Image (cartoon, rainbow, N blue to C red; front, side):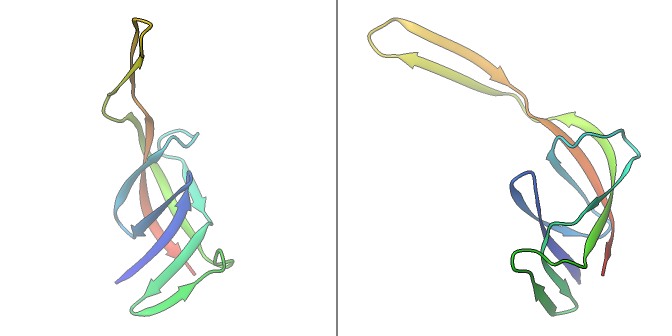
Length: 104
């Protein structure tokens, strides 16, 4: 089993070849190919490489499948003793990436 832990958009994500993941919005058009080079850990059949903080010679090729929005969340703010209530909604923009291969 070959997997890597990468850092993208301030989050650490466990990725495997041939699967897709939803990350925070990455600029680009669907079908564009991108390279992710912030690889923190790589496991190849039990052989583990750990970067300090990153592995320099390893990149991950991914393809942007589509842009989408996350579920809507409700933000409700109340100021005590002022009769002030604010209700807002928010939907985070996401990008769906397909991990093609992990290049060593």
